[in-house]
Length: 241
Image (cartoon, rainbow, N blue to C red; front, side):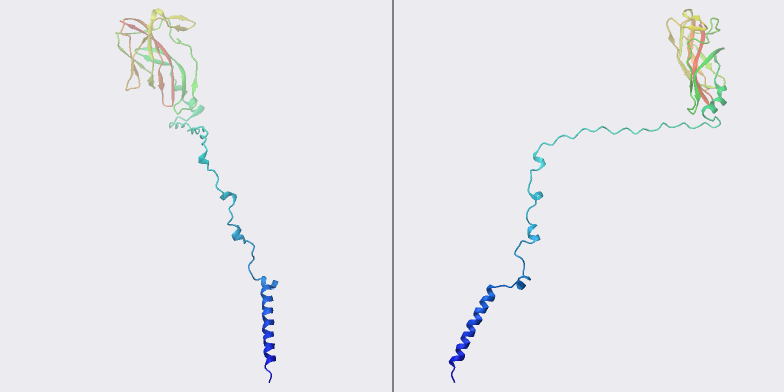
């Protein structure tokens, strides 16, 4: 049996197989590449690249800061004025005023004399329906005015029927300096301010001048009734002896 031929065939077969293996190793088919990862950068890798916002920039602290613009203070909150409550039995407004206008005094009592009273301002005690009038000075005083005779610094009671007198101002001028024209009195000469005080019965106590003489007295009392409140003027005459 000749063993040389099979051995030769075997050697040739091994050589041919190695050649084919080398070709397979150097040539890759497209079907094999389909399952392999791509050599191009993936999105995950690309995102690592710095973006413009990530690049360090100079901070604002390196520049001077402008002062803030001044702002106006807030507007104050307006608080509505409270409306006074009505007084029982008085009503309010014009109807209440007309129903109780008889409370407005026409005269006052000054010591033993009755003197004329002229209303200047009046309204409801709840603050509604105020009425104001402009009146001339010296109205109601006459050249033959009856004088109240008192001693120096004596107290003279000023009162109103059915009303409470709230306050007043009081001053005296020499009677010889008073002139009359057109039904009005005009006062001249030095004025003496007279002291006054409240009394518990709703009247006022007026102190006479402490100097002997004949005096004209100016009074500006405020008053209050059950439903109305007002003020006005009154004039009197005092003889201090």
